[in-house]
Amino acid sequence: MTIDTLTIARPDDWHLHLRDGQALQAVVAATARQFARAIVMPNLKPPVTTVKLALAYRERIELALRAAGVAPGVFTPLMTLYLTDNTVPDDIVQAHESGSVVAVKLYPAGATTNSDAGVTDLLGRCSAVLETMQRVGMPLLIHGEVADQTIDIFDREAVFIERVMKPLRHAFPELRVVFEHLTTKDGVEYVRDAAGPVAATITAQHLLYNRNAIFQGGVRPHYYCLPILKREAHRVALVQAATSDSARFFLGTDSAPHARGLKEHACGCAGCYTALHAMELYATAFDQAGKLDKLEAFASFRGADFYGVPRNRDVLTLVREPFVIPTELAFGDETIVPLAAGESLPWRMA
Image (cartoon, rainbow, N blue to C red):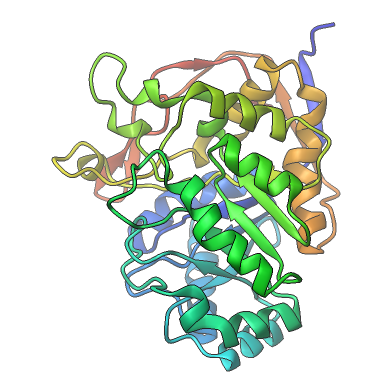
């Protein structure tokens, strides 16, 4: 039977880039329109490395929400710290006690946007910090790719599992870990079978598209993200994981806004902007798989359960009506192009 209306508990976004300044002001309302909470990434310039910086960033987000007309309490930003070689255990203790900083993000140095300050040797430089995180129960959110330029870009997630994830889990078996924006069958199998408190977020673009999307009719920079889209077999594995009954896989958009000129550039930035239409994209992916009944658990329950926060009580409704994605949107003094701009999705928010 065809479902034409789908009402679910209001979802959360467990991996989000909001940027800062005019960019933040341009995009934050789109997330607040759909999601009750979001884990906000700390890879600003300079990076958010201390509780003081995280609280100041949260205040800027709240100011942007008010300026956009979002009522207080509608949306809660959940803050993170950027892990560096110089992070110390006391930073983790302060974060845990703050009540506002809920996780720490690992960027291997040079792996993605604004990752230059990232970790160069996780176990060698950060063991005391990881021990403290394990003790207080603070999750480590991992960009799971090696930054080794001698490794093929399509293999960097699989190599990361062998080089980093397995040694990390062996050294800190009770550390709560989220493998962010999972992209491969290798990653799915690892997260599914790993011992201990391990989970993963999955983006809409990795559920809907394989790497052919980047090159159809020419190079399409707005489909370029890191980790990069992979082969069809990996996309299928991600869909199977997201639509399964496993509590380890949940929603994280990794919406990553960049001005149009920085995407359509000789050295274009990585990132897909999906905050505008995230739930329409996810609904399309689950509908194509014939698994709309699994969307609520993936989008609304599993992430909240992993982070130990209450499930949302209010709801979001999607209807089966065409939604034509705008070709571009205002982005401060520039414009931004959403993923699949100009195309039509079969679902829209009511």
